[in-house]
Image (cartoon, rainbow, N blue to C red; front, side, top):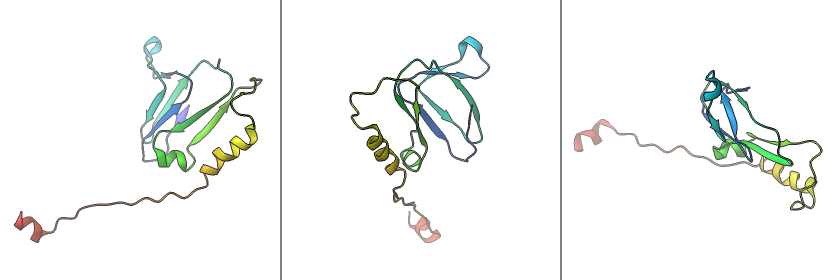
Amino acid sequence: MLYNNTMMRHPMHLHGHYFRVLNGQGEYSPLKNTLDIMPMERDTIEFRASESGDWFFHCHILYHMMSGMGRIFSYENSPPNPEVPDPAAGFKKVAADDRKYYASAKLGWKQTAAMATRL
């Protein structure tokens, strides 16, 4: 079960898998690879754990993902990935991204009464 206890939406994506959203619709439960979890919402997903290796589960909003909303799912007894010669070094690189600071800004336009009369 996934629980969003924030006041922001989180489009959660699981790489390499499709999952069913168990929403009380039985066989008509939707099949997805990304679930947009709304604020204060609970969702239950199920998927076939039949793939080998490591898979990334994360929020699709970039600054959420980069601030830690991402996890690696690993299957036990998976054969080593030949594309990743040093898994420990690779994981250190992934974990290092969680420790960076990312700048953001909020820009807006405030209309004053004097401006409104000129428009």
